[in-house]
Image 1 (cartoon, one colour):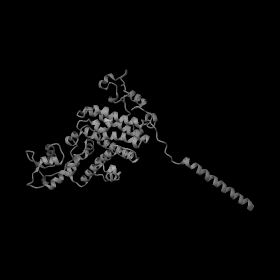
Image 2 (cartoon, rainbow, N blue to C red):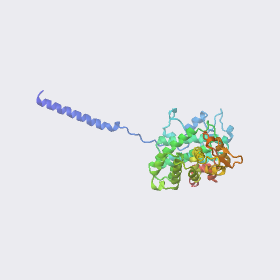
Image 3 (cartoon, helix red, strand yellow):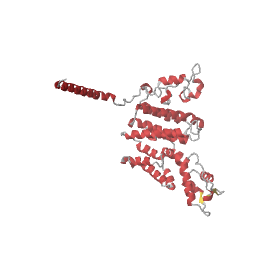
Image 4 (tube, rainbow, N blue to C red):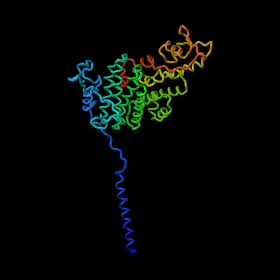
Length: 391
């Protein structure tokens, strides 16, 4: 091949290579990992008609979703199938691996419908619950818990966040924080503390994500404080609270919650129990799960401080320091740990030699710390927020 031919051949190969790279560059955007746009729910009812009919056919309706649920024998069609009440049927939670269509827009509810669903579950379903009746609680709690879980699932699938998602999660968390106090005596088949705690933490994580997107959140300071009380002693939670904007960080709710956390970390039990008396009903419910541990540690501290043969500690004063409802309850806690209480229930003897470690008490009823603060409002109003309910 001549010199001119070889030069022309090299030029042709160079041009082909350049065109090949250009084509690759043009194809590159189509190969990039671009997330699809979020789904937009089209279901304006609390439960889609398709699911309602399917659960009605397979007898999967909850008694609270049936027509004439107070007279269930009238709520069946010919053949023994229950009749669903469209105004009361609520979408149930389904696991992603169950083979059901979780991403169909016709089965997803938009933010306004999700908020309406939360308000219905709490302000109508829970409003009718008798908290003193275990039968009523065992019927309503699993239903509301499951349906709120489905609400959060719809939020996640649609990637709803910011000001649209925050009110939905705030209402759900109001229920999730109060329910452990109300359902404390239910059997494990109805109330699982582990599963419930998981839902609380995941809901808090999603709510904090909503706040991080920016916008107006009237209840942000309240729920930032609730997170601090629920995660008592968590240094990461305290650090995040200190990074909040000045107007939120210096709110009375945040300052009180931070003071309680500092008292817990410093083992200053006198100050801690004095501060938790200032909490409102919802915040007291958020703190409720820490009471047995705090009281147990406080008794150990008092035992080390007042261990003396000649020291008779007034039982009434101990009840006040531990924020229990009566000296009899304080007496039971001391006796379980081997401490001697006088026959007149007036004094406790803190002797180290008689003290023994025991398992923590199960959380029980708290009249002064929780129930008195509810005053004349219902539990449903506590969960949703009294200001929201009166609007």
